[in-house]
Image (cartoon, rainbow, N blue to C red; front, side, top):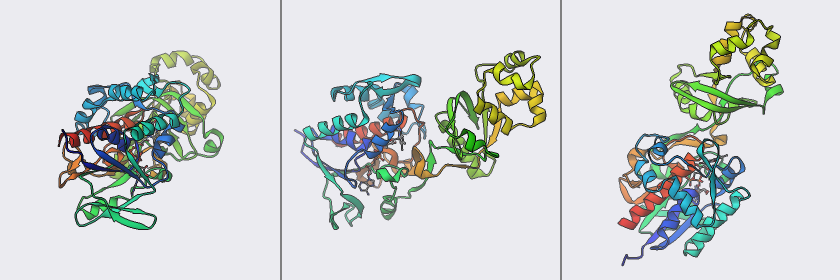
Length: 395
Ligand SMILES: Cc1cc2nc3c(=O)[nH]c(=O)nc-3n(C[C@H](O)[C@H](O)[C@H](O)COP(=O)(O)OP(=O)(O)OC[C@H]3O[C@@H](n4cnc5c(N)ncnc54)[C@H](O)[C@@H]3O)c2cc1C
């Protein structure tokens, strides 16, 4: 029989909760969370399109993550199908929506998904310690926890840290834990926005007139990356599922000072020739109707093209197929859907324990990996939590 060990899991987000579930049948598991409740960012994720995971699995799932290869084993061991089965065991059924995104069955609220997870952990005997904050390490590399103004060291056989990234600090993901790992000699990579909006300087009254409007079914390209999806015009620029995947390329270009250029194809399903045929012999004032372009799209074209180009059918179609926008900056970390930065993957053994401190594991968004939206972020967190837990079960 396995010797019963004491496991501390610090950070009550999805990565930590999945780890707790896997360990609880075999060991004494304690979850420490600084907030008054667990899973606050999970609930924020639920406010928009709640992509619990993505139906991609196997190599197609693994291909969505960088650095390449880092999460392959974990995603292979507990991928999106395994996660959906796990949810089903908890009584939460899911369905596959557009682009493979996986949602809870209609009518199931995000808080019900979280409650089902919490109920399962309680049933398995997990001890929750809310308003308990990790504030550093003692000389034996035990985590120090502060509660009610008192500090004490945790004695645990293994500690899994699942402290999250550094966006939406209201949910508890503040990244303040970085300094404590630096104390252990772990060089924590600075956090940067990922899956975030981009800043474009809109001319005149464009933002006032069009912020909030969607640009539907467009193709967005930056660097080597090209994506079909939707972008929303914001006060500051653009955001949305067609923008987030090109953020890494823009981030590199901004950092290198090489000019962060974004190209919009506003009619990705038509070739240049087809568009030229549609507007042949027509006045520019009839182009919108001929090409079925809405007011916001036409305003965007007018804002970023000259009068001469607008009046030349070929130049106009060129702009429809590749409108160039300069991105000045990414939106701030605080409002990003996810962050990169945190514990460098090079500090971790394949089971996500710290190479220098094999009793300590780090999982979820606090580790420096990246993935697009669409359920891949949460799936990366569940897979890491599950994999680290099973590594502990093997030890
Ligand atoms: C607006 C928004 C929408 C999103 N939508 C989706 C989506 O649809 N699909 C998707 O896949 N992903 C989505 N995400 C991303 C996803 O929510 C995160 O990637 C995921 O929650 C990260 O999980 P985690 O367990 O690593 O950390 P978190 O969920 O951030 O949890 C970390 C926990 O650690 C606690 N903590 C931090 N520091 C301490 C400390 N010192 N002591 C004790 N506890 C501490 C925090 O309070 C928090 O509860 C969205 C994110 C946002 C902001």
